[in-house]
Image 1 (cartoon, rainbow, N blue to C red):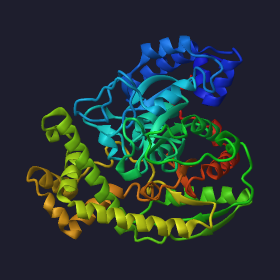
Image 2 (image 1 turned 90 degrees about the vertical axis):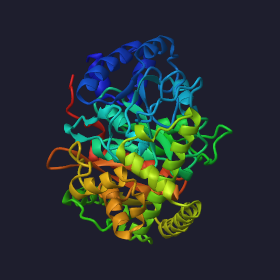
Image 3 (image 1 turned 180 degrees about the vertical axis):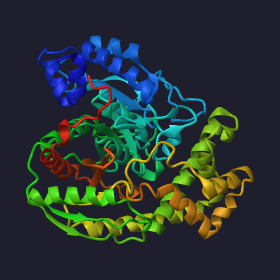
Image 4 (image 1 turned 45 degrees about the vertical axis):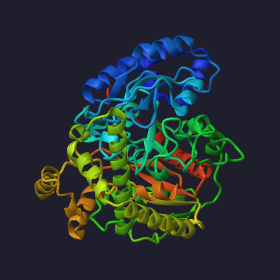
Length: 497
């Protein structure tokens, strides 16, 4: 088997075992990854910054006893810093370059991972498709005419295309789980505080943002969590480690679980029939494995919940723009894309009192959700309301585009005070992904699992959300469902060696 075929087929755990056994060298894997990365760049556009020469040097020096020795890796271009590498955050705003690296990157290096590139993301991670003025459109390896999702869309494309078996990702409103669902991958949104964001920030979006990875297998997801998890003395939050490692949890049977199933969409908008088929596939798998499954409803007003989530995120985006303008000593609003500019203006329009009231309402909703679902070991929910959309499918059109243009050019953000106008833009923002922000607000772990392929040949994953701090049960359930479904060996038909 060629090195490239090995890279395309194996997960990170399997590749590391082959490196340790002397069957393949880190340099061979990295060269194969670089070759595939260049071809993926031409057809899928997942790369923000190339780190090829650094990766070659690192591959020659990496110790073979590290848990992921010599395994090619990629870092998302937002929220985590690699020393000396420009961090664009998907924006035309001048990049940030640090003389230090984020804790998560240092832990990746210590585990033997070799980073070959940073990956594309929508501007400031604010959209759940990866299409930007700065880098262009990132495309899905299953069908380049469709989205990878976002905001970790570049990382998802790199993993699904067989360039790297695992890649760094982050999630503030679905940004790990949405690309996983679009690209047939495993994506764990970790519990709040499980993996530190430091020293870039101590928290982001009031704790909504977490980071981990996109992977081809549950065992890789678990093994990487063992690498990334744990405080560093700077993080604002923390989580106790379970009695066993996460890798051991993923390798164990979960026993008979009680699972809830939520199908109702928070916004009440249409849901594609393929989503019901994906949920049916997941429920059937769970029942076949002997788990008790029952349909439930969440104790929230979904529209009010997402409205408050949007208010908080807009306030955070406005604060980000203020901070960057102060740091760079000049106005930057004109460099932002129109949707980002609209969000920041909306955030500026809200008072501090309105922002805090939205946070307090979300806090109370979180308590209700956690209490209501505490009786269940996990709750199954959709991730997407529709299969992966065609590229450009979330761009504003018709009246929506006209409204955005008016809001932008005439600076009439005050129109968002009108309930009907705000509802229109809320629908426009969340019609594709209405379920994912829930776990970001509650801080619960939630894992995306590939379970279904649509009639059009595109993956469509679902999510299982667990109790706060209980990634172990989710990983055990996910590994069991992965084995029963046969998804671990499935690959996108892109550039097959």
